Length: 146
Picture 1: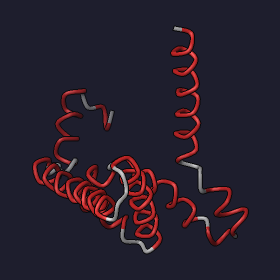
Picture 2: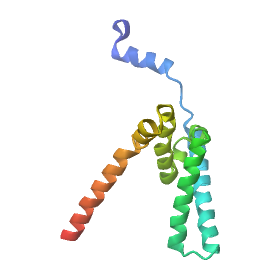
Picture 3: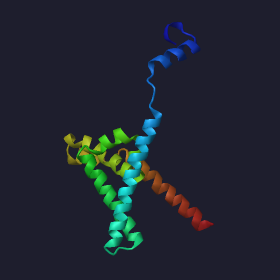
Picture 4: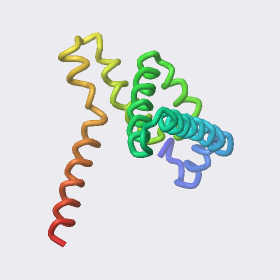
């Protein structure tokens, strides 16, 4: 404890130093940013269906498009600004995941394409991919056995 403060005194001291979080405005921003990303996804689904793709194929094409746009915006340093504004709303699964793959690679670019970008691109996403693969295998084995 700081200067032999009691626990209660320390907690009061911390309350005076920690800034209040604007929870309501953060939630509204997250809702708006996440909603815009999802709306863009729906627009792409309708666009792809209008050119003759099936619903399933349109969904796949939309996922690929959102991944590409997220990676491009990350590379142009726009997606981090969206993330700073929208917080959790920018972590809509597919765009947030693409951002988490591209960001470390961009930061490691000065180290070179092989030892920098190639080595760092999966530093954050790698464990997620690994866990997802293992969990899928276990689920598949359980499904097969039962």
